[in-house]
Length: 454
Image (spheres, rainbow, N blue to C red):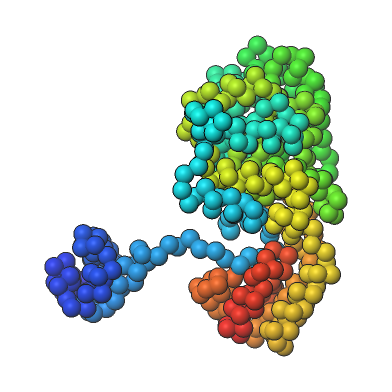
């Protein structure tokens, strides 16, 4: 039976010669069309071997057309984030400010003085555009920016701890998203991990007793995506700084989220700030640009000038350097902090600081547009992306509960398959939509999308 099905598979030439293929041949270059057809037929043979029947040539061309259309459209698209997670890693983390978007657009349109000093008329470093901003904001002596925080940590360890020991608390030998693990980064950098203390309690004496002739640094890793509660203890960063200085070794702080503002002012747990790390005596501090900082993806390294100079000249720096678009966006983001406009201009901080009264007003507006199937309820938003774990912000949610779970799943599927794409969250067979994480400019689009499926 399978043999008969295999014999029904048309040849590549027969498929391409069919008149129904003309739209596809007008859509793509001929050599790409051949590859698409050949690839489809190869997959079809595998499917038939698995027990399926061979479709007609008309059905085959319909499927090839879908594949061809897919090749001509980017699968990366903007979405409306109504999930209630402000820094949603799967949705691209921090949305950018209009100033950052404009700055990136400006340098994307043509050439830019990325590594050209306009006053001297000769080559310069791309880091000169941003280093002064970072130093003024954090109190650090020097700064260096790479493509993400994982690269920043890898660079620091590679430059200062290769074939040497780095001491880390067992409670901080963590894994973050995408199976990125501190022990693996250590191994890649050539540094040797030396764990001290226990999962829940590590004292400064544990570090002191572990320091030896081969020790290059103490590493503090901020537990950004989980909490330890109860019978716990961590050595203070100031204690670690004093110990590192007295033993003539480095203190490296992998801070992660890159917070510059006091989060407790917004009803959140106090997140360690970059400024506090520098004041506590950290020699090198690494953090992200696209988390609580609110900018594009970047790995930011600040610290002592003599150490940063070595990082800048390390061969790995070129491999992980930041590009002109993200550099432009990051500069514009930092300028908002310099001008004292972070809360009013940067979307992450706008969302965190939005008063509950305004959220309730928007939620009521949504619910009214959706009709009797929707109601406004109390709820909570989270910061997300490995920032301020265990801390939430009160919000007002629009709850939509269809007649059955099947209807709910169909609604959610449609919202993910037609523009504008809408991402909410499901709890207790109810679709929940959070205005805190939805940009006000997207309200009309969200209402239209929900109405179309209800």
